[in-house]
Length: 136
Image (tube, rainbow, N blue to C red; front, side, top):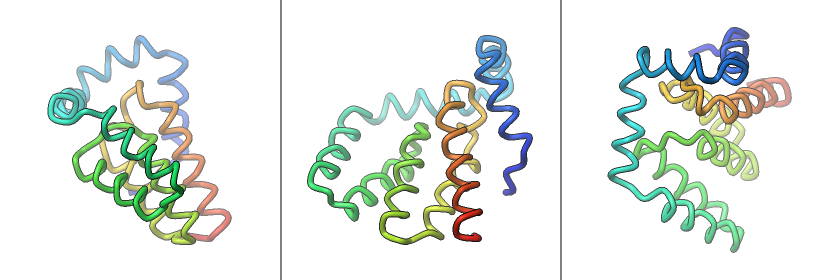
């Protein structure tokens, strides 16, 4: 998937016109909202984040990557997970995986939801920076 300039404008509009965009997004992307509810019912995000924080405190990047990948595999809808995974890959000098992780976020429907717009904009910025800096 190619992330175009329109993506940035859409996300900025989500933030500028949040209430209107949420109303419309619930109609256009009902499956994404259902997946969020299902995830919350199946998993306890606080336990997940606590496990990640423990790995961060001991600076175990490989464990951080493993935990973040598991969250994505389980269908987590938080953009910060993709952002953190991309950062961890970049720390390990695995630029291709950092880039692929950013792209993977935009392959989900979650990026289209107004409540993820801030995180999506950060991932988009990271994606563009990786493209520019590393020519990926």
